[in-house]
Length: 142
Image 1 (cartoon, rainbow, N blue to C red):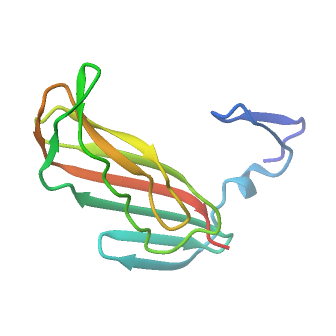
Image 2: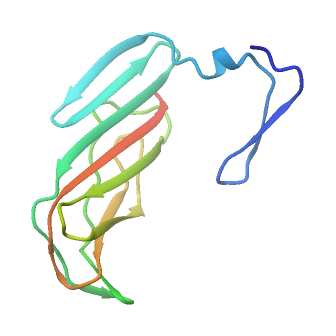
Image 3: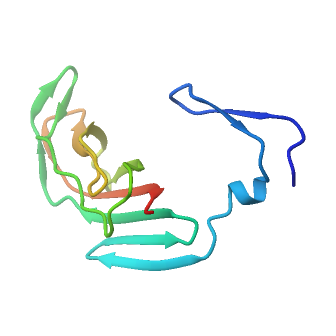
């Protein structure tokens, strides 16, 4: 499908993109070039240079005892190393899941081409929490 008029797309940083190319090409990842695994981390490289990395990790028991306003935060937790390095820093989504422990994840920053950002776990009360942290990162590998 060809676009006959300029299509303006805006991202969360309020950057405007002028897209006037074939949409099937714009959203086509191409064929899978390779799959790299390292522990609980997987990198899927596509022939058009896009790479998607994902992983799921147990947090173990993490104390959330640092008072922060009306909540309690853990100490900073280091990011996870991607199965393969990105060419430039990717877009990353981190999430936390726990069975009945009522906590959430707050990204702190410091991500890079080789590692997810650092993060803290947050709770409404001071207590120990455990669960799983997952991430997905999308960027380029070449």
